[in-house]
Length: 123
Image 1 (cartoon, rainbow, N blue to C red):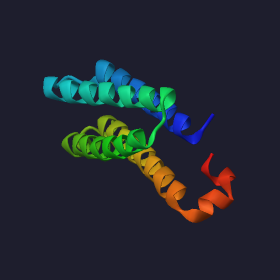
Image 2 (spheres, rainbow, N blue to C red; image 1 turned 45 degrees about the horizontal axis):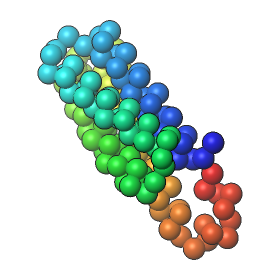
Image 3 (tube, helix red, strand yellow; image 1 turned 180 degrees about the vertical axis):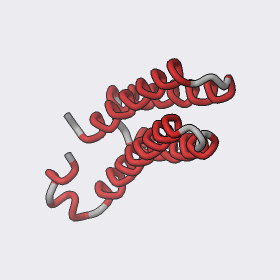
């Protein structure tokens, strides 16, 4: 499996986890709408990266990672009085941020000349 497909698969898993957490634990309707919308966008991005990995998908992955991190970090702050909600939102924030960062590093490593000399580093 290529690295881009692995990133796409990770986005799909993270989106599924977010949907499950939203359905089971969220009570605030605004939070439900925002997190479900973000999860659906993320799932679409994951599918795109799995089926047709491209440079555009990598850029979108970085953007979604930044938005994901901001949304879930904000939710963690809002729910800081509930430890279980805080931990869950903080975990989802970190995972989304890391996946977006990994996609960004994929772009930056493929642009470097030494990447062509050692193609095994991109997989």
